[in-house]
Length: 188
Image (cartoon, rainbow, N blue to C red):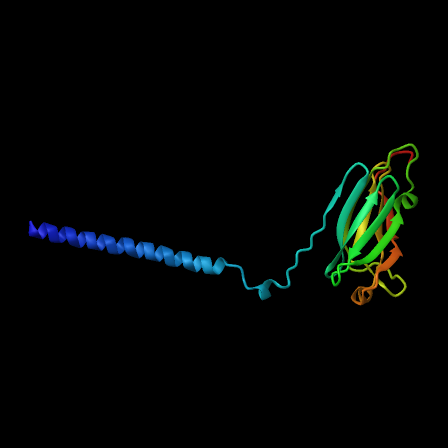
């Protein structure tokens, strides 16, 4: 009887050791995996920057954001009723308006008579297009589509980073970079 108790005690002890080692090994493995999956320090991901652009529209108005320079974005607005396209850039150094750029898309694209204006607008990044009297263009294009005619126009404007640094508000007219048609209907 004593021998049965000793064997049972040894088996219980052995089972406890095995279970304890299994739990400890699982915790160690979880710790190793957890350490490897933690995000790297800030300096490692410093090169990755979120570059988000957004657009939205209603029946008479559209807005979009786009990168104007490295750390500056512009808010593009398009009023369907007047055809006025504008971009406002906030100066990141002082929070004031750093740029106001405008044009009229109806005069550029030719609004169809008798039809209610209907536009789509988005922005997209671009390296460099054209030369604006020695100034480089903004870092994005603003694309406007006339949903009635299928005409498309890409707009940009000159951007002087030095003016922003000096706190000078820039104001020029937006220019058409390119214009084309995406709808081919016979007779048009």
